[in-house]
Amino acid sequence: MKNPLSKKILFLKIKNQDPDAYSQFYDLYITRIYRFIYFKVNSVNDAQDLTSEVFLRLWQHIKESREIKNMNAYVYMMARNCVIDFYRERTRDRELSLESDQVLEIPDEQRDILAQQMKNSDLESILTGLSNLKDEYKEILVLRFLDELSITEIADVLGKSKGAVRVLLHRATKTLQNNIK
Amino acid sequence: MNEKELLNKLKDIKKFEVAGQPQESWVLSNKEILMSQIKPQTVQAEPQERIGESVYYFKYFNELFSQKVLKPVTVSLMVVAMLLTYSATVSVASASLPGDMLYPVKTTKERLQLALTFNEEDKIMLQLDFVTRRVDEFQKLAWKDDDDTTKAQKLSQSAKQISQDVIVVKDNLNRITMAASIGALELAKQVDDKTIEVKQDITQIQNQLSDQVKGEVASDIKEAIGNTEATGVVAIGVIIDQGEGIVSNEDTAGRLAERIKLVEIDLAKTAEAIANSATSTATIIQPSSEVISGWSANLQDARKAIAEAKDLLSQGKFNLVLDKIKVSQDIISQIKNEIAPLAGSVKVITTTKDVDMSGTKGQIMGTSTAVILNNTNVIKTTSTTEETSESTRNIL
Image 1 (cartoon, rainbow over the protein chains, first blue to last red):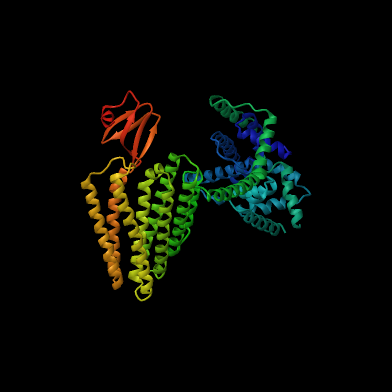
Image 2: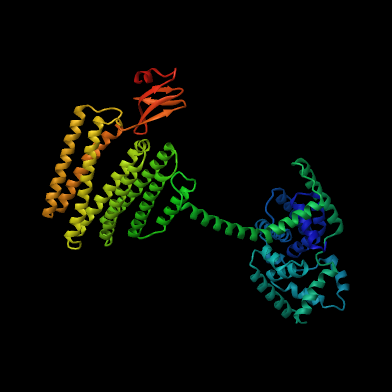
């Protein structure tokens, strides 16, 4: 759905608790939210569970008529919170380190396909560079360039000011640039 | 790789659709599960209004306009409108009189002015201005072309307001005197002058009123004058106590002489009222000769006190002069209190009216004539009614 007006209309329908509209919303966002979560949890099963949870929780929020100013940012924020809860739970249960799980990796089954596609491209170096970045930088680059969120939306998702987001994005880009030199 | 190339490559990652791509089968099955969880909830819950596509467009533009265009414009317009309305209202209200719809706006503005004045002396000055306004209102109401009942009600309210305002002046003057404020002396002089002016104005206006209105507002006017006099006496007290060596004896003596003169005028008027109570037809119930003798004796005491005050004034004993003036004023006030209820008015009652005589309630039906005394008590009634209570019939 490229047309921003159509997207706004869709969000209005969702706010009006229209299940068909929510179905369209699901189609539009499932890949992006899954990817956002997957990059953070690095597990297909966990990413699937958390993505399902995000969509269900979001619908409940809509049903409770909670104020949602920006649906685009809100769904990412909810995904982010689900991941945070997931790690909290996991740390408590298994005493696992959060850092060790947050590595940007391509799953095994997709590595070969990706390898083919990456031939004659700089993608591999970029992915390597990305994987060496700290989580904060990785997250903001994914939100900005893969999910194409605006600075305002990222600020909403991360709970930071727009200025802080711009600075963070600049530092993340510079660090990635240095990593792949 | 420069920054621009890097950013393009980052965006390209999406094109490969392998980085974190969910399995298609899972996407579909998950959707089915999600929709099955959602739809039953929707059915069980209150049925959602089916809204056509066009309505959503309308809602969107409405939201957009209300948030981004109309809201700021509307708020700005409302603020401007409120400011204009407020200033216009306050402006119109400043000319309002007691009983008018906008009068509370005027008094609220005054209260606000007082609240925003920090200096105690400035506050008293402001309150003196308010007293002047109240007297001005009183005069305008007296001249206004209202029927007697309405006029009496409004004048009564106005007189009460004068009382309240002069009491506030008196209390504040006492307070700053206790705090030994430097400006207290100067203020006291102004309060003294103002109270004399106010008393004279009220008395003059009162004399212009019709007998019926005069009778109905008599007690409120008497109270207003009494409070004004009391405030003036407090002001002179401050001048005497704090003005030693600062205020010339001539000045203080002149002020006291003015007060004595006013009391003498009151004495003369009170003597006249006593004489009238025995003979005038305006007096509904004629007092007994014993009561009149008592009033005359008291009036004589007041005269003596004033005579002594004059002597003491010539000796320069200002504090004692003030005491004698107070004694005299108190006696006059007491006599007036006793005479006032007897000077009433005759009123034709054309509707049903409940009357209360000494705790026994009765009802006058039809066209009745009642003597309204002191604006509250029915002392004597004549009635064409067939149904009156026993207690009322006894009075007739």
